[in-house]
Amino acid sequence: MAGWTSNIMTWRGDGNVGIGTTNPKTNLSFGGTTAKISMATTDGTDNGQLSIMGGGELSSLRGAYIALNGNEFATNQGNLHLAAGGTSGNITFSTNIGTEYMRLTNGGNVGIGTTAPSHLLDVASQAAITAFGGFATKFKLGEAASGGWIVRFSPSSEGYVIPCGLDDGLAGGQDMPIGVIYHTTPLTAVNSDVWVVNAGKAKVFLDGQAECSYGYFLRTSDTTSGAALASPDPDVPADASHWREIGHAYGHGSGALVNCILHFN
Image (cartoon, rainbow, N blue to C red; front, side):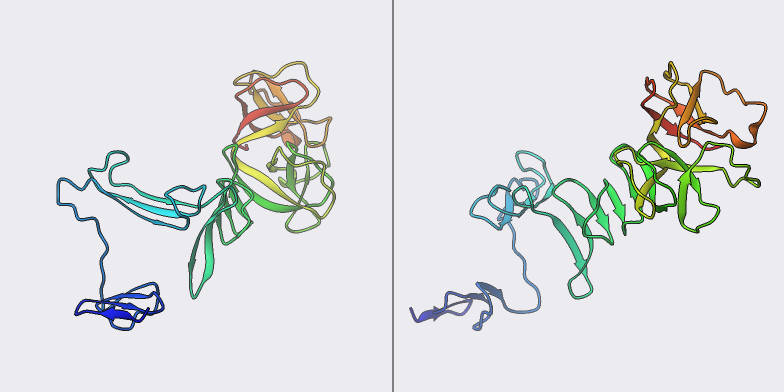
């Protein structure tokens, strides 16, 4: 078709439509310096929804979409709904000529400075908020360790952590625990990267003792590397230089992982 042109609209033979322009560059182009798209409703009765869809219907099963609800829409009044499509779609945020700086994955993780966040909030793959509710940072292992183990800085390698709890004869607070390896971590080899929970909630490996219950105090074990001992009282051993309190339990456990609120002393 040859298309047609009026004073306000152009429909070209290639299918492009222009409003306020005779030379539409895309399927729909606007002339001038500003353009508005809206529902034809009035103030107080803005009961419409304006949608832009990647598929043929307003459904994430068909593709990504944006839905803008009027203040009097039937449900979710005034909402701006941004949805990725299918089970693998992500929502990404880019600036600086297409450079991606933030991502919301299909699994619900948010990444800032990373395109593959591994936690609820992952900042440049160096700091994170875990799904369990803890604040974590990434370190390298100086010794093999596993999820739930208590760790401290390595005295010989900067940026490395090693399991703590045994009397290593260290002075000056070198044996001070700094966190707990995130509990989903399998037994991991030396030089591997691990997430260490430094604050908030964590699961901590208990030494093989009979009981741990709500409110019990947790401290480093003097018999099992990386493990915690539990006590109903904040007792301090006679040799306190190598026994450190790490928090208190808010769950039951016995010789396994126990839920803990971390507060290192």
